[in-house]
Image (cartoon, rainbow, N blue to C red; front, side, top):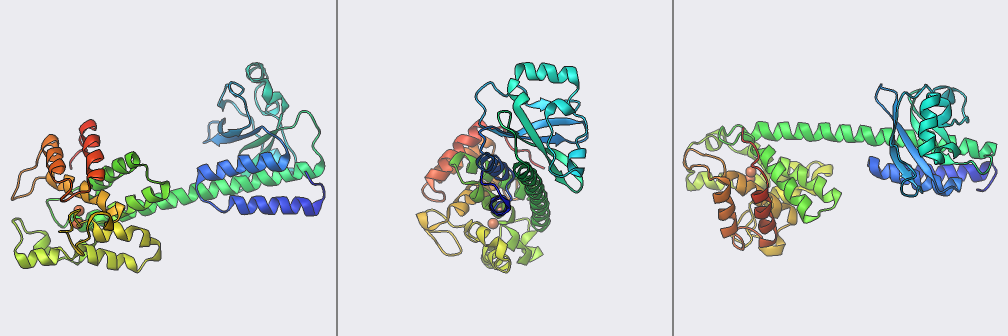
Length: 360
Ligand SMILES: [Fe+2]
Ligand SMILES: [Fe+2]
């Protein structure tokens, strides 16, 4: 590693940039392991996090260990290592914070631990974990020690930010779901519709191999697919029987109303395709635009199958609910007309395997 303050600053700046470029905790952990190994010139890196209040450290990530080298993934009865936070730039070994007999047993099956030093992960004045490197064969210089400790504290912030973002995002999804359910439950016959459409869509998305970003957008689009019903009159939404031609035309406006509402929020643009086109049909006879085949976005094709399947299996005043096998058969019959066979086919296979999603 390049010695000297300028070199150290550059290294830490690069690390900080890398760590703050993502809010996904798994990716933050990957970056920490990879960059620590490169920056400290060591193969073996171990990231341990404290588990709640029970004095347990668990392995959150590791790099450079050969198979069988890390035989334990949790360490119990961990003593306090808050003093490392107080004395900046000080590192510790596991031997110092685990009970003596316990450490001897652990080190006997994992001798690699004897050669590792750890810097604390600190946020808000509390130690949250340890970042360790193999450093037995050489003494770390003062600059290297300070760099390791700085990497560890930046890592702690990166992980904490990722966790907070996840929490915030989950809270947002729950709020969106509650809002969507409140809107659609004005129709007294469709309780739990949103939740089930989300569940069916998610099952299908994982079997279709969508990227994590596509899955995120799909989930939100499924939650909000009927949000435009907020603009549909109660008299139509709550009508027990079949709709008149005029009422049907008004009802058919809900995808466009939903897309228009979401269009005001920049962060929602990724979900508009699913909201706007979930009533399009593969043969081009759907609405609002009569898109055909691959003109229909994937997100919308997935929601269309999930939405229709739930409608088929839900009882309405003018029709009985189909059971699972009947509904699967109905979806199969509509492959190529209503649904894209490459989406509806795998969906039917999935539904055959899964136990039915509970109705409210
Ligand atoms: Fe809809
Ligand atoms: Fe729907």
